[in-house]
Length: 244
Image (cartoon, rainbow, N blue to C red; front, top):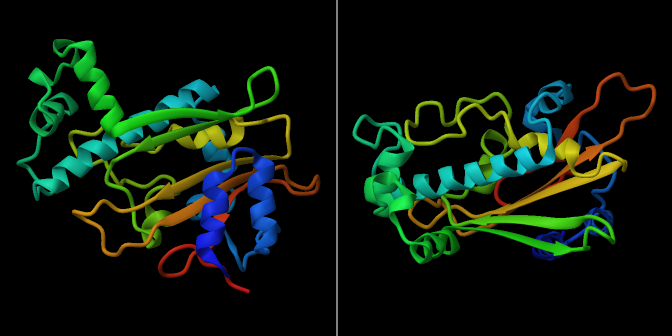
């Protein structure tokens, strides 16, 4: 399989149909235990995901919160601190002051130009694709945070009910109970909704130079199925992998 080509196709996709076409070309369009895994490692996961944020805007905000956490984690690793140690900042405001030089951790003490420069250097929200009057836009959240290695996806970005950040005092998204909800809110009137993640571990912590990618899909189940489930592509080792 040409993994780089698949990655590029997913990266450029602006509609669910674009993702489906890319997956179809590489034989990944049909859910199978051989090449897809339940989201979070939980087969009947819809009860968890569906009970999160009540609206799409709230779920999008959770993505930005997680991006802020990732940026602070990157800065923590950059100065060789263990984010779970007792010598790191004890709150998000303290981390903003220590890691990003924000006065007293209060962005209001910076000028609008300074706040804009900080945001543009670390987190961007980009809207592409269709206009609201034409259909559904594609919303992209980009950050320069810590990133993840491909083999760590299942335990981090696409995990559920994990305590990944509960022992990190300066982050906010600790309980993994927010952004996953957008999988069910993207296009509820359609049978398929897609959320793609492209990530690379930051240089100060990265084990290798590979970029990982997952497409997270929500499908409407057959009528006879009792539970709804979110699935992610199966990975093996580095990068995107499938089993035939």
